[in-house]
Length: 249
Ligand code: GLN
Image 1 (spheres, protein in one colour):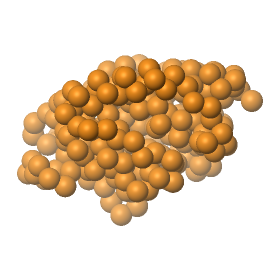
Image 2 (cartoon, protein in one colour; image 1 turned 180 degrees about the vertical axis):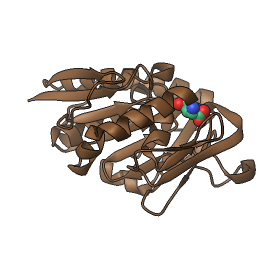
Image 3 (cartoon, protein in one colour; image 1 turned 120 degrees about the vertical axis):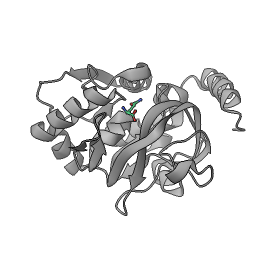
Image 4 (spheres, protein in one colour; image 1 turned 90 degrees about the horizontal axis):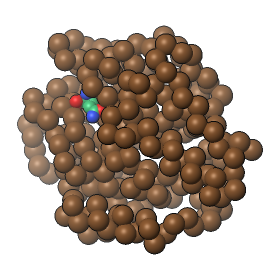
């Protein structure tokens, strides 16, 4: 099988190297002997609904409004999610897949409605290292390592009852908290086969377990069926990022 990875609108949603998530998925698939192809879908192009996995990155306020309008009008990603295709959405990608978000001019912009989430301006930017303890729901994806990344956003995301957070923030802001509260912060969202997080990095380079969880879903195999890849290198990289975030792995 050739794994077909959709890199969705990197011309709009591609900040902080997030397009690297598709590269990491392809690399880790090939390292296990699978063919892998990254299909880049640019703004204005139709989004195929038949791909095996989809990656959306972060973006600036104007860019993400354009992305939201295109995704909504096209409908291809929504059809893919309906059949259970795994989707990874980072920062603006997460916001765009929600019900709505507020743009730079304070207008409410309709999102794709694939995640029960709403995003409003927090009044200040949340920038720095992000570390997240995975929620117990991520155990279903065989992810229990602390997730590490870098965040830079002004939006604060609130989840509704049909979405669960990806995890609990150990360091950083994640989805943000009302009135800048410093405890009980959560990051990201899990909504069926859609995973969202505020972690750039790209997040899959920093968190190989998360990469393999998505890969296993896309390939239709168990995570345990994937042979270990570059374990020592990954551990060194993670230790470095954990030190930057001042968290213990
Ligand atoms: N424009 C969004 C915000 O500032 C998302 C930023 C990003 O993707 N890094 O909240």
